[in-house]
Length: 396
Image (tube, rainbow, N blue to C red):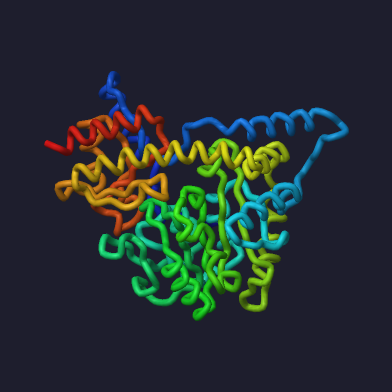
């Protein structure tokens, strides 16, 4: 009997487990310390009223024999798929009904999509990068290459920044986690043209698209000509609508997308029907309400609140003269560590000297060394206090 030895090629614990462990040790040593957490990207505002009411109605339906529902369709209930189609149409992207698969969140599908691809494929990820893209492909035994982000390219790598050969699968996240950088139409078109030239497939993570307020910036890769021939898009309600505890998202695989004579849409359906039993009726009804007129307005109010938090942090860094990306069309602020400190050095310094927790950039890849991620998902009061503490500490 053998285990999957690819697990030995990854860090022993997931990134945020190490962050939590260090905070726990500090708290044990300093039980009276006031700690503000701006590290993990979990939301703090409650669900929108329209969402809560929809969930309650659906729960009541599940309590009556006449309206009870059992297993959902593998691809999702029709009412939610149509709501997602309508949402995409609102910013000019027309999807077919069969393109859409409801999921329990972007993280699951980002890690599971490689199931439909050969282990022999080479995977390209940006550096720095959301760890799930890397770890899930290491588990699958795939070769990974990188496109390096840096201050010189504003952490928006292009095909010219690829190191290590030509990819078969390309991960792109915009707005980016962890850097908060957003790809322009021109840069995203470079990637689409590159993928089509190679016959590669782009897995585009659009989990933070709702934070984009500039209409000139693409919210979906399918706004780019040629994307339906090379791209899969992952969407999430976790940050759009506060569904981190509800778990619902969606993946878009164009019906015409093929590689090696196979329909990727049909392969994904086959995979899902084997390994996934769908998202509960109650959660899907709640998700449908997100896309209703009142739901969209209420969710936008929450997003604007988080944007306000990001602005507070960004303005603090502006006053300190510290370089950063993000904070405008993203809930993440990616700052350069001051005074030449390493990422984990700055983590410890900020925790011990100001009681503020962020995420070390080195945890997102080698290109993240010397950088640090802060999130805007805290309360307004905590965010303002954290910014005040940071400014006091870093002005010395």
